[in-house]
Length: 446
Image (cartoon, rainbow, N blue to C red; front, side):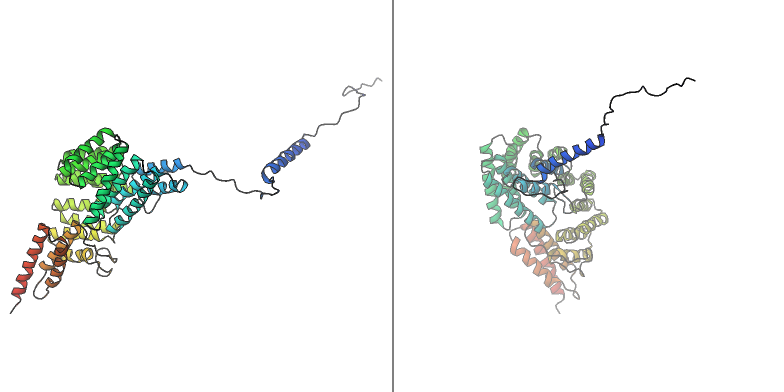
C-alpha cells in the first residue's frame, strides 16, 4: 500500500535563527537612557545632579503681572485686604524689574485712587505716603517721562487736599504738583493725563477758569481715559453744573465700570439735585460691586444714610449708619456720621455716645454700637470740626441743673474755636451753645 507524505515541502537548507525583537527594544532603551544620563545628569565639571528632581516651573513674565493688574483695575479690585488685587500685581511686577519707572508710576496712581476707598484718616495718610514714595522713586528713575510727571502731579494734589497736616504743607504740595504737571505738559503737550491732572491742581488752587479749560482739553485729547472724564466731572461739580458732572462721571464709569468711587460720586451729585431715587440707585451699585469682589466698604452705606436723612427718613438712615459701623467698627468718622443722623432726627440721647466715640474716643464698654475701642478723630478738617460742633451742641442741649454737661461742652467748643475761630458758620454754633449754657448757669444760681 502506497503511503502519502503530508506536511510542508521538505527543505534541506540550514534553518536561520529567529530575530528577538524584545532584546532589541531593551538595548535601544539602554542606549537612550545612557545618552540622557550623559547630557542631563553627568556634568562636564565632573558633578552629578540628583535623579528624579522636579521639573522647574515656568517663570511668569513681567508683562503678565502688568496685564493682571490692569484686569483687576478694570474689575474694580484696586485694593482688597483679604485677597489679591491690582496693587499686589503691580508690586509683583516691580519685584521682577525694580527699574521700570512707568509701572512704578501706575502703582502710585492706584495707591492714590485706592485712598478714596479707605474710611479712616490714618489709613489715607499711610496710603498716600506710600504713593508719594513710589512716585518720587519713579521720577528719579525717569525724570523726563511725561506720564511719570503727570501722575506725580495727581499724587501730590490728592495728598494736599486729603491728608496735609496744615495749610503750609497743603500749599507746598500743591506748588510741587503744579510744577510736575507743567513739566509733564512741556515734555508732551498732547498728554491727556497731564492736562487732566493739571486741571485738578488748578481746581484745588481755586483757579476755576483755567481748570475748566484744561479739563475740557484733556477730554478732547483722551476721550478713552477714565481719568479725563473723572477730572472734568469734578470741575463741573465744583461749578455747580451737576447735570454735566453726572454725564462725565457716567462716561468714566463706562470706561471702567467697576470703580465704586465713581458710583459714589454720581450718587452724591444726584443727592445734591434732590433726585434721591437715583442717588440710592448708584450707592446700591457700589454695594453690588463690592459684594461681588468680597469687599466690605462702609462708604456706600454712609452715602445711603445721608440720602435718607435728606428725605426725612431717619430710622432707615440710622440703620444704614449702623451697617457702616458694622463693616468698620474702628472708624471714628462713621460714628460721627451716625451721631449727625441722630441729631437731625432730634434723638440727642442716642447721638451723645456715638459723637463721644468720634470726638473723644471710647472704650469697648462705652461703645454701644460697635463694641470695640475707638480712637478719637484729630481736629484736622471741616468735617471733623462739624462733629465737634455737634458734640458740643448735644452736651449743651442735654444739660439740666441736676445733670449739667455745660462745663464739658464749653471745653469742646473752646477746642473748636482755637482751630476754626475764623469760620463764621462754626463760630455761630459756638456762640449759640455758649448762650444756652449761660442761661443754664443763670437759672441754677440761687
